[in-house]
Image (cartoon, rainbow, N blue to C red; front, side):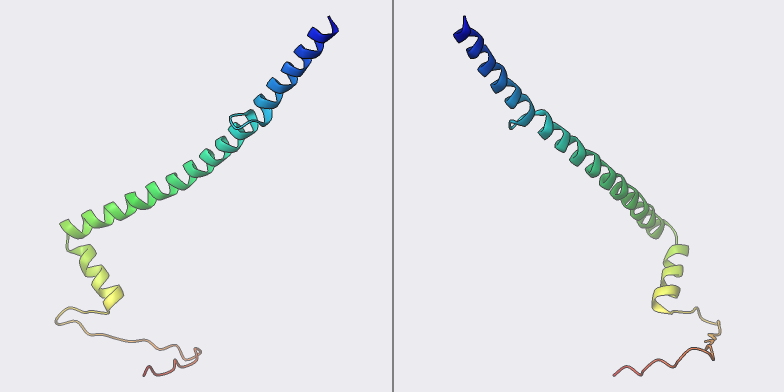
Length: 99
């Protein structure tokens, strides 16, 4: 009888080890759930970024307002007949000349 109880105890300990610390155990499950949660947060941010970029692409394809705004802000372009004024702040240090 003692041998059977001892054998059952060994089997129970092995099963508990497998459940908690094995390759497919509870601790591994918790780690995977944590990884999935962080990946979902990252995916949400990337989906939002993609949505904004898609809207910008559609706007650039369909209208000229976004294209004109981008040309003005990034390239410093002006329309014919407009006058360009550059305002220089007296308090800011002068920028070095580019070579």
